[in-house]
Image 1 (cartoon, rainbow, N blue to C red):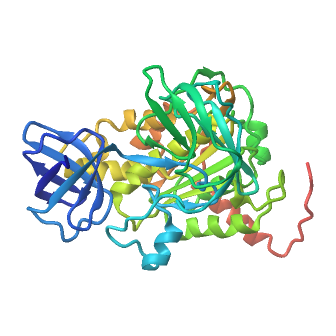
Image 2 (image 1 turned 60 degrees about the vertical axis):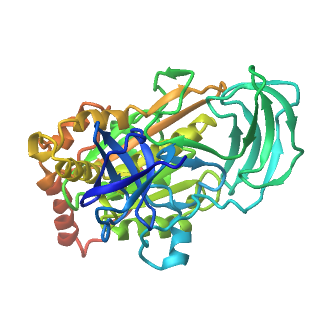
Image 3 (image 1 turned 30 degrees about the vertical axis):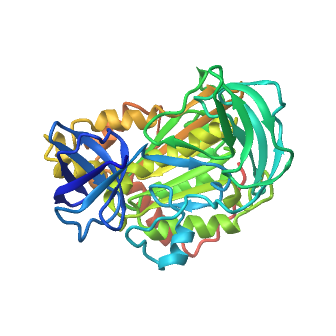
Length: 440
C-alpha cells in the first residue's frame, strides 16, 4: 500500500509532513505533483521532516508526499565510468538533452542506460556455492576498466542456472541462486546500495603502499598512501583545485571520482574538457576513460550538495570491491559543510561555532573514515584514497572546518595565499629572462 503524507509547511529545501507515521529515517520520497526527490531526515510522533534535493518553488501545504519504501540509493552497474552525474546520480548528459543547460524540476531519468546491451563473459559455474562479493561475470567498461559483476553483499546460495556469454542489459538475469531457505534470487549486473551505509569488507589492512601522484614535491616530501586521506586547505586562488586536477590526471589510481561540491561550474567544465584530450600514460587512452564526475555546482540545490559526497564515496566503494584502487577528489568539503549549516539553520538546530551544526565533526569523520586499504569479501584487495579541498574564509586555518578536518586526515597539503601571489610577482619580474627547464 502506498504511503502518502500531506505537506504542512515548507522552509526552503526542508518540508514538514504531519500525521504520517509510515515513513522511515533515510527513506526516499517523492514530493508534490512533480515528484521532486527527497529524503526523510527526522521523525517525531506527529511530524516528519524531509530534505528535498530539488528546487521547492511552488510547493504548498496540502501537496502530497509519497514514500518509496527504499533508502536514498545509487544504481551500481556498468556505465558509471566516463559519465557525469549530479549529486543524486542523475546523468547530466541525458538531462541536458531533455531540458537544456539547466536541470528542470522533477526530472525523472534512469541513472544508467537500461536499454544498452553489454558484452558479458560469465564466470559463474552452475552447482557452485556463491558467496557475498563473488565475481560472477565481467563486462568491458570503456577501454580502461573491466567491470566485475558481483553477488550483492547480503546474498548467498547455490548457483542453479546461469546464462551463456553474450550481450545483456543491466537488469537482465545472469544467474539464479537458491538460498538456504529454498527461495530463489535473480542476480543481474545492477544492484542498489544506500549512499549513507558503507559497503561491507572482510578486513581493513594497513595503508603502507604509496599513491604515486606524479607530483615530485608531494611524492618526495609529503607522500600519501593508497587508502589514506589528505586535506588541501587554502584561501581563494591558492591552487587547491589545480592541485586536485594534477593528482587526478597523473596519480596511479585505477579510477578517479571527482566530486565538484558547490564549486564553480567552469571548474567542472575544465575537468570534462581536459580529461577528454589528455592521454593516460599507463594505458594510452583518454583520462576520462578512468574518471567519474559528480557535479553539484554552486547554482544547484543545496540539499543535493550535501548528498553528493556520499554518492561519490558509494560509487568508489563499489569499484574498490572489484579490487581497484580508487582516488576521490572532493572539491570542496567547505562548501559541503556550508550546505550542512544552511540545512541545520532551517531545521532550527542549536548552532555551534560559526553557525555550523554541532555534529559537523562526526559528519566529516563519517566521510573520511570510508577511505582505507581493505581486503574485500571476494578475497581481492582494493583501496579508497580521499583527497578533500578545504576553503577557509580568508585563508584562516583556525576556522572550524579546517580544524575538524585535520583531526581525521593523515596528510595536510597547506597552500599559502602569500606564496601563491609571490610566485606571480616573480614571474612578472623575470618575464624577459629565458628559463631553461631542468629535470632534477
